[in-house]
Image 1: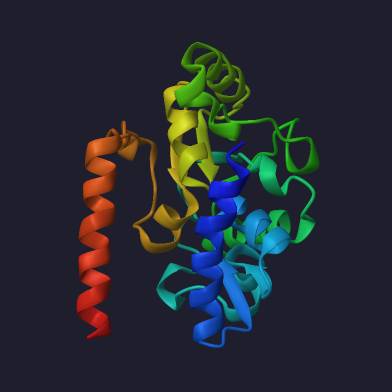
Image 2: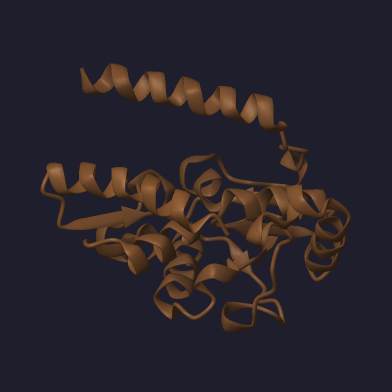
Length: 204
């Protein structure tokens, strides 16, 4: 609701994009897809709609075949009406070779994971109820998401949850690998900081 502060901060991002002459922004975050699509000047493309065009690592094609895990896909609510993203995620799962069982509430009918609108820090008791309600909809016990907040919410709700990037770059996923992955905000920010340091090294 802090519109003036948002516009001020977004303007600094827009200026950086204009400075480098960016024509297209590729995003992996569904909220970013909406923000840049609504307020930005550049063309916005989701990574998940781009992957079917550029492909996956050759070593990962079919890696999920024979896995004892069947996944449900939790679609992110900010892009509930963007069919290209839904199709791209399912293309990735098919190419990886993992079996998918569709949820009743998926694609345009998907439900909030419990983190939308920053409800988790604002009204945590309601957020927890929403997380549990959505996680209980799993028919397999294993949820794959394409949003970090959604993945965390599905685990908080009681499901085994992975981000699709874990499957794209990981080993064959089996039931024996199910575990709690949530680290808490301090460790999460530390990981982000380490990632930023590593990226800075590669740029120089």
